[in-house]
Figure 1: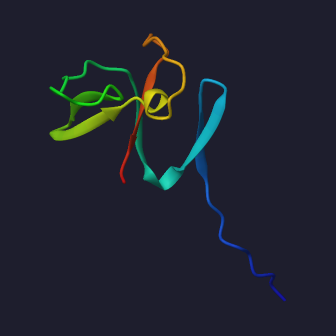
Figure 2: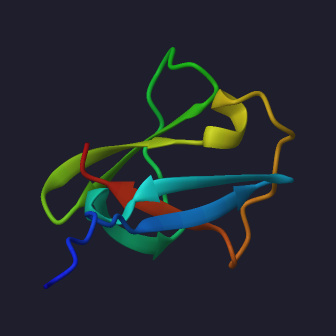
Length: 85
């Protein structure tokens, strides 16, 4: 007899400050280094702007600011997680 297996899910986990979060790996389009962002006038502070990702305009949101966590410096180690939601 074969044993039925429950469906499994995989997650990409990441840290924002001292908090840990996870997103469904199937929603992750790519992980890339922080790039130049085109600012949007009158946007909330957590919306950093937009980038052109191979012809698609993608909004850039700083989730630290959205979740009201401490501000962070953008360095060579800062990455953007591009999601397809």
